[in-house]
Image (cartoon, rainbow, N blue to C red):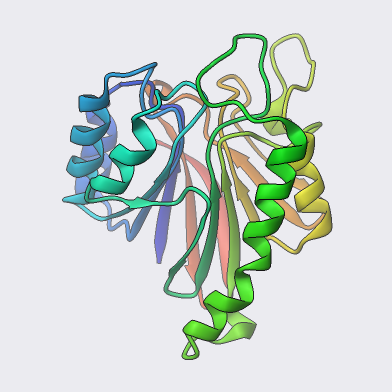
Length: 229
C-alpha cells in the first residue's frame, strides 16, 4: 500500500501533484491542513473533490484555513480527519487540525492545554474503534498521528533562525504514546524526516515546492521517504 502525505496547500492547484497521482498507484492521500490561504472555501471544495476522484483522501484543517473549511471537508468527497480516528486497512489515523498559538492570530489556533486534552481524549477512544472492527489484527496495526502542528523541538518545527516553534502538546502526546508516525506541516521551511523517541516525524514542507512524504506499507512494516512531484 502507498500513502502520500502533503501539507500547506495554501490554495495552490499544483498540476505536478495531480500528474503524480495519475502516474502512480496511490491508495491514500493525507493532508495536514492549510488547504487554503485564508480561503476561498470554493478552492477547498474543488481541490478535495478533484483528489478524491483519483484516490481516497483524509484531510484536516490548518491554522490558516477559514472557519468554513472543516465543514467543507466534511461535505466533500474526502474524509474528515479532524478530532477523529479513521481506520484505513491496517492503519489507524488519529487526526487533529489547527495549531498551537502563533504571533499572527490566525483563525484556528488552540492553546497547548486544550490541544493536549483534545488529543488525549481522542487517543482514549482508540479501543472503541478496535472493538468495532474485530477483523483487524492488533499486532499489525500502524498508528499515525495526523496534525497540522509539528512537535516542539523537532526537525519538523525549526524555522530559519533555528528556533523551534512547534507544539509542546503534540510532543507530550508522542512521548506518552506509541505512535509509529507523526505526519505534520505548518512550518514551510522544515521539510524533514526525523525521529522523536520511536516515532518518525515527517513534514513535507509547502505544497508549492513539490514535495510529499511517501509511506509504503507491507503488513506491519513501512518505509518513509520524501518524494518530489
